[in-house]
Length: 525
Image (cartoon, rainbow, N blue to C red; front, side):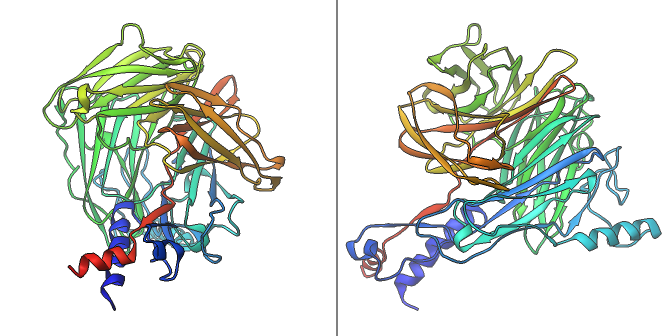
């Protein structure tokens, strides 16, 4: 093997280490990019996604959706399959797993303990690893449905023509009980570190951190909790083992004796890698998924706070010892404004801070923009949003998001009840939005929009002509930016405004591959 090929493989391997499952291949030695000495931008050729277990409620109704956009230059062959995780532990109402261990890590004992345990294990083995969703063609989403508490966590991979931009989503409706409402989360890639500001160990909340291991070897995970006075003392938060190709829900309140309303969760993987998401369930205001915040940064954007939000609570945390005074601005339809009485918010180093911002948006689309002085102190943040009046409220979470650098997709959209919110906090931007074919029929439609600097727009997104079923919305940045986006799904059940919000992170479907001739010249020095 020559040195040029080795160099390209090393670059692809480094990419895989950063993005989870992502992988690319070297360009054809005769390609135009290589002949002219320019770097080639190629579709990712293999990627993976993890979906947490949707619910522990027998009343839950879950829809899984999978989609890959049509990508120019992608392979003409490939597969995209989501399968049930091989092993899953179901927590009982008291937070213990089926093996009776007191919430230590939810791992199932390998020994059978009676006929009932054996029957449960047999039922799990019967569904473990079975395909749940498989794409047939790019540009058309597919769905699968599952009812009750037995809906599984999913582990999946895509390659070839499906890998670039592959996206999956699960949406769950719970009719009653703790966490009732609409809960949605985009399936994510495995990683080794996650931040979740906005979790809770309070008696009114039932928050789980869901850990999903896609690999054939066990992962070892540490969970750190930070409250208003600093790190909480935990009993079993270190060295949690997640078995190969398995999913483990960990009830946060079993990790510490301290009851706190606002907690920041830090997940650190000692060995292996996992997918992670917090499911936050409330006795009074329903519940939703809390995805991980963007990496700690001195500038954060939390996109797409619903215009009819009745209460917005910001939770922020800065790692380390340095305090920070965050400058708070709202990107509204008319531009950046400073909320009265909340011009700056003080966050102490290593301590979780929470701020009630009230009905921040006041009937208009809005996104929060948080800035540390000179960007010198990194911060993570999320908001908890309420809609509806007291007694009939629903909650959702919006973490600090990554920008849509090239392309991002939201799934499970319907003709009614879908809101696409886009903000360009730093400069004018142009975006293209494509509505895919429907799951049961419909013709794709595309529109282009201009977003003014410093504004948030709830855009009238296109809908497939002759739509049947649900569809995907793909956002592409065409010029300017950076652009941040989120999608809200909403419905009304029994007078309660069910809703869920998902930020749209870049799908990382394309990658720049170093030019082979340049690598060779370096090696020949």
